[in-house]
Image (cartoon, rainbow, N blue to C red; front, side, top):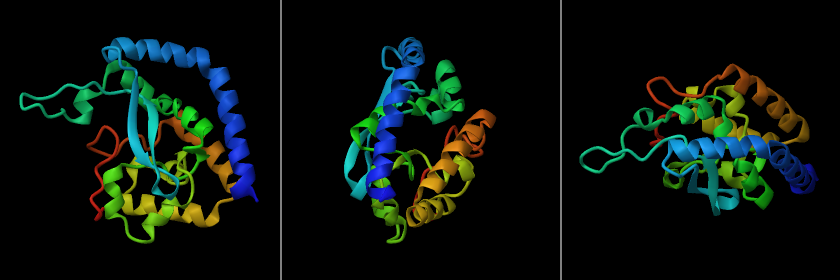
Length: 201
């Protein structure tokens, strides 16, 4: 009952209220990133969601598009802008995903939506992470986020799918605030965010 009906209703109501209450703050960030990123405050990218169905995730754009002399994008750490660094450290870059939650692409709580190219690298067990809507925050995010290995992160995603409940979602929701406040697990050592998943890590 909770997984099929109640969870989606809670997602919609909380996302709608959140967008209304945070709208002045979101406008300020948008204007700041417009100046920081040459008029491009948002980052849109296709990600696999429920049942591996593709959707466009919406985030604040925290990195510019600087490239080397060969036309290749510079490393993440080199493209992270001044305002973008603050937005990422405080996890404010995730707030526009409330729009994805309203649309039904995402949930407030669930496995994070990862890159399309990772789909062919998952094991059959890891693919089960797509049996639920992806979330803005999740079990892996409150248990290490980008500081833990990919195998552990994906293991936690599947564990969440198998144990999904209101009490678990509430626990994750509350622990997310602690993680954001303490700025824990934002990046993996040597990376601006996380390393690339290659199926073996």
